[in-house]
Amino acid sequence: MIEENQTIYSFRHTGAIRVFEKTGSLQKLQQVMGHSDMKVSLTYLRGLEIKQLDIEDLPEL
Image (tube, helix red, strand yellow):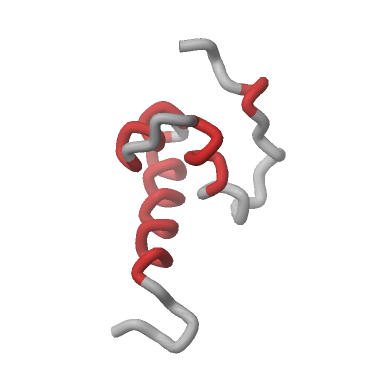
């Protein structure tokens, strides 16, 4: 059941974090989420207690 402050988006966000925690791969996260821009994928990780990730930190594809 969805709690008072939860949305369907909350489940997508949690799933994105779990994919990243399991794989450690930003590319896999981007692929699973279907994002064409890595910047969008990075917004899903803003709640993790990790170093701030910037687009410059990513490898060139």
